[in-house]
Structure formats: C-alpha cells, structure tokens
Length: 285
Ligand code: ARG
Image (cartoon, rainbow, N blue to C red):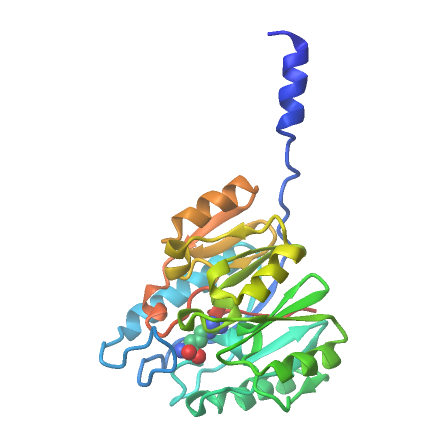
C-alpha cells in the first residue's frame, strides 16, 4: 500500500486521547427503608410490591463498583418513613465544597431536605445554605465544568436557578423539561466530562433543545428506547460511565467516543423512578 494512503487514513481517523478518570467523592443512602407507598412520578405504582432485599443488593453492587473504581463513598443513615431517601442526588447540590440545600416539591419528601443538610453540618461543612425556593438538588442542578445546567418544569422552581447562581457564583443555565416521565434533569441528561453531555432532546422544550444544541453541538443524543430504561441517569468519572445495562444504544455511542460504559442493574429502584445518578450525590471539593 502506498505510504500516502496510510497517512491520509491516519489523518481521517486521528487517535483520540485516552479518557482519564478522576477520583470522586460520593454520598449515598442505603435503601433500607425503600418502598413505593405513594406516587409522585409516572414510574411509581404503589399497587406493585417492591423487593426490598433486591433493591439493597442492587444498590450495594453500585456502591462496590464505585469503590472498585477508586472512588470514595460516604453514607448517610436512611430514616424510616422516607422511602425515597435512597435517591441521594436529590439531597443537595455541592460545588466548591459549598452546600446548596434541597427543598422538595412534595410533602412526602420534605423531611429529606433538613436530614441531608444536618449530615453536611455534622461533617463539618461550613458553607451550608437552606434555600428559599423549591429545588431537588442534583436531580435538577447539574454542574458541567464551571457552569450549572438547571432543570424546571416538574420539580425545581425556576426561581431556585437564580438563587443557586447567586449562591455558587457560577452561571446557571435554565432548561425546561416537558415529558413527565423525565421529571428531573438527571433523568434526561447526563454529564460526561467538563464540556460534554448526553441527553434525550424530546424531554426538553423547543427553546431548551436549541440552547443545548448551541452549548453542546457534539452531544451524544439518546433515543427514546435508551431514555425509557433510564440510560441518561448515568454517572461519569471522565472515563467510566456507569449507566443502566439496558441502554444498549448509549453503551455503543459512549464506546465510540472513547468512554468505557459500565452496565449497572438497578431495576428494583427504577420502580420509584430512579437509577444510577439518582442514587449518587457528588461531593465536589
Ligand atoms: N421517587 C423519587 C421522586 O419521584 C425518585 C427520585 C429520583 N431521583 C432523581 N435524581 N431523579 O422524587
């Protein structure tokens, strides 16, 4: 084969720099009181029994996976009567070691807000803020590098976006969710690196879709099939992307981008409308 051919094909498919994982610190809450006793999103059906042992086993595998990848996992004690407390992502938003508390939309979860804030105070966090407006933590506030994407439409009040911007001193970009199955931002969009995301366009209003195209023209786009198995409820450490194993299309697209998708089975927690990311609150130093 002539040398020029080799050169041109190499130029056409440049070798991507290897993806590098950075060690993370997470807060998780064991689903020891997990159940579906009320319905505040379309996934929850209190008539269907939940297998608590299976939920705990699946959650434990996720925690062990984080540990095996070199991450640190802190835990908060689950409280009886708060069956959704396992979804630690909703407990707060932590950026630069500063803690923006969560104020829940539904009365069934309101006690979780102070419970999570108490954990931070007891752990010695000094900048702990109790917000004025409803926001459901990292469920709707996702840091991408030095900016924060913020969902609204079902849970978080857009006034909390301005409040978070003032508190963190970082640009907060509001996005409107329109599909009740994807009621939190982290069910419709996942952060892959400091400047990359993947998302399901149909979960967003036309204007928000345009904003996402503007900010992330090369984003990984999810199909309905992948979104419906909660494939976007994912956690990336910069190299490994932990996501539901059923989201096969996303696994392929992530591999093409040089990420290492790691399939996780959290189907018992999906009965409450949550998966990998919902169970994981990132404690950003
Ligand atoms: N049952 C919970 C709720 O509806 C699930 C929360 C899932 N958490 C998340 N970060 N999306 O509030």
